[in-house]
Image 1 (cartoon, rainbow, N blue to C red):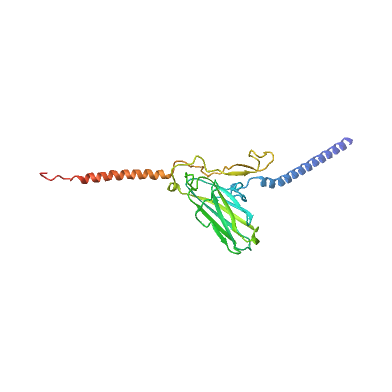
Image 2: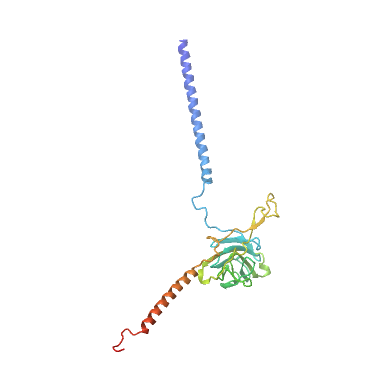
Length: 293
């Protein structure tokens, strides 16, 4: 009987141990599921978005001088929030055979007086380039919601005389500012939007010659010291040569579609000469000699 009691007690202890193990296993499983459920949103948040990473969004600030001009690409929209009276600067590349067009929109506050805004374009030598057409300067009426400006430059040439003010391949600077403003409106918040586009004109505007290098590639300000006068460990801004360039690179070469038209013209002239010679030779002698001649 003592043995039976001992066996029964051992069986109860074994069942109790198995029960405690099962409960512990269930508790561990539940804790693991809860941990996975909590980690799932974090993993989803850290994973890349399904949308394209390059959404074409442009910079959201502008420079305050030529040296600190914000770089943009052709076809890229740049925005900036500033105060009325500030000078806003952007820069973009333009190559030979292109006709750049700069468009700007200034969104004005709800209440303001009459103000005149202007957009100017400069080349890499800080020479102001004339607008071939476009509303370069416009006056915003009192309480107007916005004002739109545009400037289309002359076609960028591959080569020019040193004394000329022709647009050449290189960096171009856009300056947007207000030229007529009442003192009461000075400092009011405005939103500016700038876009630089270029139309390929090609050989119809090409000239002989080319530049060895683009005209002053420009200066860009980096977030860390990179020039000779700055300390790389201090994190102070440094100035370096700009790396912006057209999407297809700089051409400035000897080839253009002007050579195609020149070759076609030469072939047509040769055919016209052969045809004219054949006509004059055939009309110079009678086709039939009369009897007795």
